[in-house]
Image (tube, rainbow, N blue to C red; front, side, top):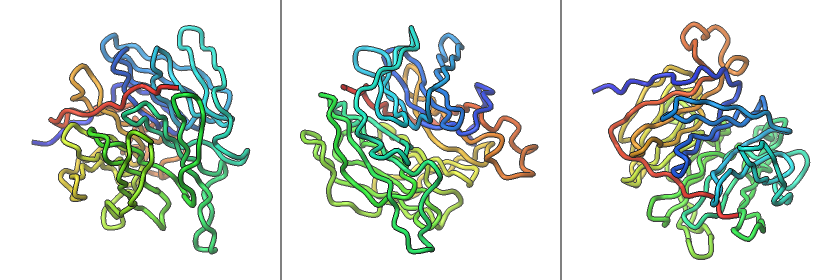
Length: 301
């Protein structure tokens, strides 16, 4: 039976991203990197809020004890939604003033992982340039370390519900790959990097991701008008068409984690001439795919 995808918020974001469900407050956090702005949506109260940010915001995670942690240009910062106050936690990442955060996810132990990319766009692989994006980890004590480099457009961070696997993708057109790692939960160390899924055979590059309770990986197919469900062994299990060209991030939410929220690119970043096909581009969408999802825990820092 076809899955219906509805627009629940006509936000008109330019670059909607970073969707994550806060199971404590029952709020969906998401960002508009380009505005820049932080958004929240409370489906139970049908309430949406927006906070203007001081710099590009790539990712957000609910924080243990309340509030959120933001991935801003000058580093990870704590955010208090009651007052709008922002306070810097660690300024080591994104590592250099030319870079910004792009995509992040919290591991089962509360570490906040996030990747970076150049503010002006990725390096050119056709000119022999190696990607200079990096993957950082914010520990519970507020310290930060760089774990991985040579990324062009880091995306798709996710952890399996049992915490034994970490996933990471690169959206760069010449890469378009999702990798799977073995993951040491106790020490927060990924290893044994392997290709999980090569998206060059399907419409859409790999962007943001979500995990479901069965351990399947859901991929937003930016440029492809669709989202995919991939089994733990890397096979396409389901394809769900969406009413926007550039879905960017996914998050399971709702009381039973059965609603799948979808962010996307909006006016200015969609293909010219497609506006009539996607009048709600830049909005927040939701569908009920018939499976229960997995919501990452709050960040511990």
